[in-house]
Length: 243
Image 1 (cartoon, rainbow, N blue to C red):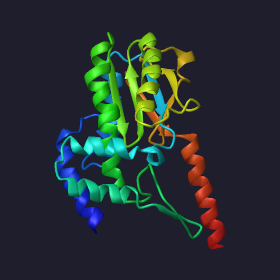
Image 2: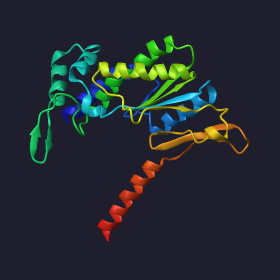
Image 3: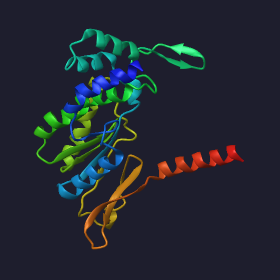
Image 4: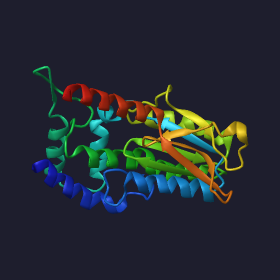
């Protein structure tokens, strides 16, 4: 109950400052709205490449010192911040053993979603908006849903430079860019048949170049193979347990 009350206070303080590119754990900012934003950006802006990025173990690696600094930007009540830190350091139970936590957010904690949005608001959203966009000659736009995000880019060379800058930016705040899952995808609306296979996954959906019945360009979406396999496996396990 206390976590829920504090989460409500943090939402009232920080929500008005969150950017339009931020989705997830926010009222009226669902997965559907995030996908619609991607459609609008790709179809109406000069997008040629998509950075399909992944943060390795985000919720386990949130740096407590940095989250405190971010909270202090808007909160002057030291008692409230100390209480939040106590929740962050509450530890976890695993196989009947208690483990202290020096980083990360509480597993399943009510306060974790808003803290993650605050963290990435300063680490990622504002960085893209205030620094990256100003330094890039081509068009750049990010869409983030919790810790899952993609960056739409106009210029290929700038896309590669951005990955290096993103790696350094995340490392500064105790986060790691997954080298195995991060890639640059050619995703321009004028792509030929050979580029149609260039796809990216976001929020459980595979996005690809497609056309409407009238022949106009659109972003096609279908359930990703990974998501489909997970659902089928869960269904099979449920059927076995129910038989």
